[in-house]
Amino acid sequence: MVDARKDAFTPGGTAGDSRFRRWFAGPPGRIVGVLAAANALFSMWAYSVPGGYLLPVLATTAGWALVLVAVGIKAVMQPVFGVRRPAPWWHPWARWTLVLGIMAATLALTQTGAAVRAGTALAESAVAAYAADPRAEAPARFGPYSVHRAEHLDDGGARFLVEDAGFLRDRGFAYRPGGTPPGTADDSYEHLHGPWYAWTRDF
Image (cartoon, rainbow, N blue to C red; front, side):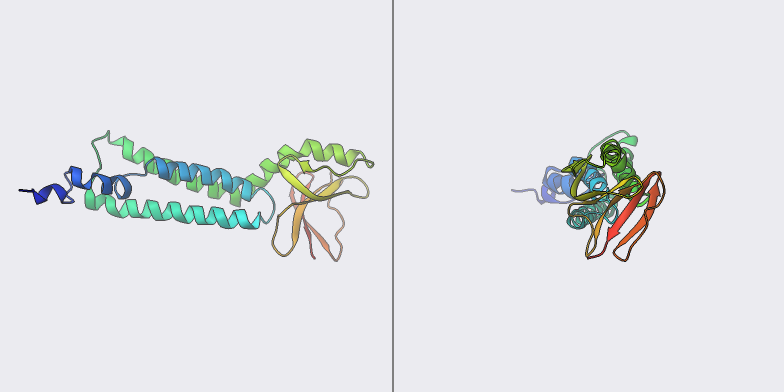
């Protein structure tokens, strides 16, 4: 006879519920952890330009929604089905802390402009060299940014639009150690840090 108790979902843990527990109970596992870490790196790139890259921002938002759903399910199922396997008391808490910490750190870094600062730091030497030579041709890239259009500014400095950045308006950067570039009917600037400004161009 078949013992029906082998297929019951009990807190003690039997072979019948091991697969269910593996996916839906206990602390976040490798899949959730890798997804959170990969999405954190993707988020930093998506928000590395003022206004963000539209499609990557939408994609990383969907990724975080998936992580939140997975974490929420595990949080609800944990007290129902108990711990998946014996482990030191700190082991489950370490997993929860890691995933939630990645999410919180990514939110802080993207919303405080740290992603933009990192991008401009990587691009600064190339932009400064281009700005210093009025005869220099616009390059294809400045650091991590693919250049849609670049040009020199009067009285020193340079500005460039980033490929695929912004929505309805083109977005990019202005580099001007001498102060804020003069705005026009089509161009507006917002100071970021040091000689860097966010450049917005209306269609």
